[in-house]
Amino acid sequence: MSPLAWIGVALLGGVGAVGRFLIDGAVSRASGGSLPLGTFLINISGAFVLGLLDGLALTGTALVLVGTATVGAYTTFSTWMLETHRLREDARFLAATGNLVLSLGAGVGAVALGRLVGTAL
Amino acid sequence: MGTIDRRELAAIFAGGMLGALARVELSDLFPSAPTQWPWAIFAINLGGAFLLGYLVTRLQDRLPISSYPRPFAGTGFCGAFTTFSTLQLEVLHMLEHHADGLAAGYCAASVAGGYLAVVLATALVRRVRVIA
Image 1 (cartoon, rainbow over the protein chains, first blue to last red):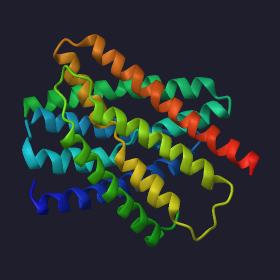
Image 2 (image 1 turned 60 degrees about the horizontal axis):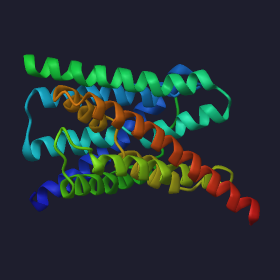
Image 3 (image 1 turned 90 degrees about the horizontal axis):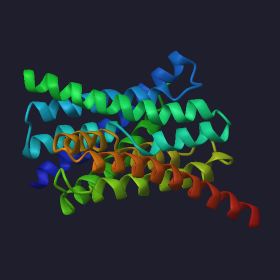
């Protein structure tokens, strides 16, 4: 990759992270914040968009910039795990298990749906 | 609605830049075919979960109001370094290549490993604090 592309990765990674923070804040305020719905919606929407890009057969630097850098930084694994752990610490076993199972299930579904839409376009 | 703290956003942006750079660099160095175990993303996700668990637990009880380590290192770096979407796309590619066992194993190992990483990091911080 060119130096310019690496600068793009950095800037778009920053954009993805700030986008995640703002959307998580908005969802948490709207939902009351007792369940980690912000991270859930972020991860599922990001999985859909990455599937869409894959379906559109985006490759090379364009895929790295839009997919790996932006969508990759927008979605997150670490916060998903941390929030699940904190739910379990609060003895909210159903919510913790649901957060793992529903995220995985909806995530695969979203990426498959995104790919289907991208292929059709 | 909450007020927007521009310095907090800048800290998240800077952390996100570094996290994305590190992840793209590592994925570049250790590429994997759809029927292989994706070591790069696997290691990134478990390592990032451990780091976030450690950071958040350490900062939890003594976070000063004007402090930016959590937005920078937690929300920014760990959040952007680790990824959910790529993991799910890798799983879809495994399923399309009829590597169902690999897909199931990768999902299970990522979730179990990531969760365990947070448990270990949390326990580590709390044990150190009890001793100190």
